[in-house]
Image (cartoon, rainbow, N blue to C red; front, side, top):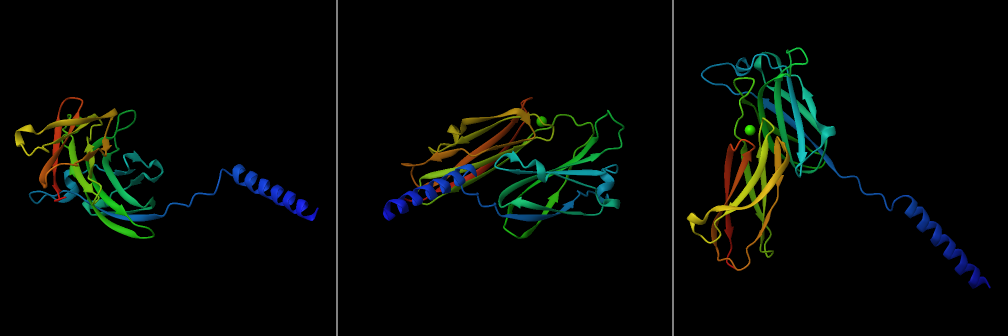
Length: 254
Ligand SMILES: [Ca+2]
């Protein structure tokens, strides 16, 4: 009898634990670790012209934060540029750890609404955010002139990473287009070693047209001979203007 009661109580207790766990949506996920980045925002200088004199009306810099191609909207930050063309320093905190892309736009907001603010410059950089650490980074702005801006060509960045023994290389492909009409990313290889065979192999559509595209295609090189190969990335906007970047991939001897 006692054993039966014990079994019954244990069963009831188990049901209660399961119900509690279920009702709470399962074990709480561990909060993802975060870190911070301090940006030193530099302005271009040329021919003795003092920094921001080249974009004298700039009174707002907006920094946006991206991870894995998605914007972390809560982390976007508006910054007032330092007066007199000096360096602007700003720290963004509570950024989840990992590889992070930052894009900054600089504006002259003196235009009365509904006219849009004049877009003066932009800059971008990639930072690896580390837990409970403040990383220092430089963000160099590139002037956009004249304003309003004629359509300009996108820029492209490509990196390659592989894991020993996996026979797979992963490409990190990024495209940027300041006038928000990035249309697609195209990756190309010459795995057969013939430079004339270098051609677009796959395409990633940036939809809707945006300022930023992010894509991580993979390539399985099983059976490929050891050697150094080239992979290229084209970032193309909706008017057909493009930017290009390439990366060398070294396949080890099996
Ligand atoms: Ca464009």
